[in-house]
Amino acid sequence: MIDQAGIVRTINPEYTRITGVTPDIIGKPLVSYRPGARLPETLASGKSQVGVYRKTHDREYVVDMAPVVVNDEIVGAVSVCKSLNEVQLLTLELEKQRQKVKELQERMSALHRVRYTFDDIIRAESNMQDIVSIAKKTAATDLPVLIGGESGTGKELFAHAIHHASLRSDKPFIAVNCSAIPSDLIENELFGHFEGVLYSKPVIGKAGLFEMADGGTLFLDEIGDLSLDVQAKLLRVLQEGAIRRVGEVEERRVDVRIIASTHRDLQQLITKGLFRNDLLYRLNTIDLQIPPLRERKRKFPSLHNLY
Image (cartoon, rainbow, N blue to C red; front, side, top):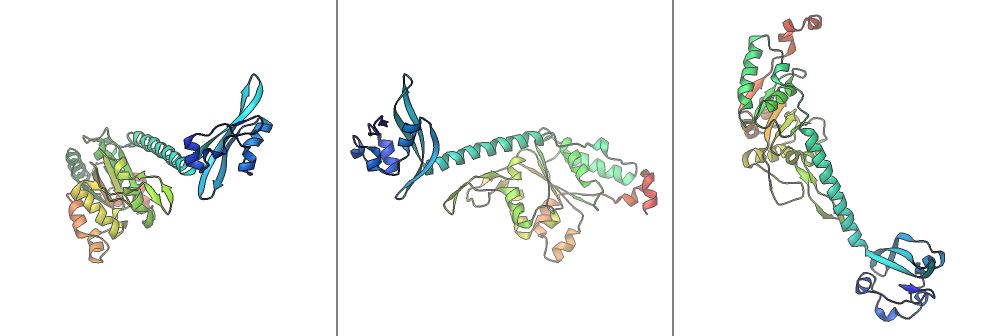
């Protein structure tokens, strides 16, 4: 704090810690001790200054400055310093809280994303009736489900219906199209990433889709497009019920039911070395093969002309 004459009247130990300025400055004109000081500007103008960046030797900090007014008269000015590292930590904490709020909002909205039930599935043909019957029985379990079939046959509709009829129906249903996310980003999306410091910059942690789906169902559409590396991590989730965020060592327990779908022949992919046989074994506990629409066109008169 300085008085009307610009003389330093007091500093506290925290100011010394942040700036390196010692109590020797007390009783001396601020500008003679610190020629670049901007607190005299606040004293002269009577206007506050906020978030002024300062650097003294190897110390970086930001300063808020305000006039001291008594009986409508400016009798001095005060500056409050914050270490830049502390500002970064506060900013990081704020972003963490914002991220948590965003994730909570996404989880809450996820509770209402299931739009279809078994009543929405047209099943006039006997083979469709059999598939729906198996799917209904499957819904009562926590077993992984693999749904095969050509594009447009209603694989996601079945996933919705199974979740809706399960004991997890009041928990999140998260759907992700594995073919729509670039291979270098899919691991981050599924498992999240660490919180800490990278290259001297703070990194805000992010929960992945597995954590967001905790207690509910994760639908992996077009699972045949996952890389072998991500397949290995997915296999570990199925075996251990735990995930590890990208960049972290610590594992996090998750309770997620996996429903996967594909229009590709996974056995062929295994032969070509593009899909893990042990992952297919884990996923294939319940195998639902949805027949193509051309085999069900009797129920869709408008489709006759397409074939």
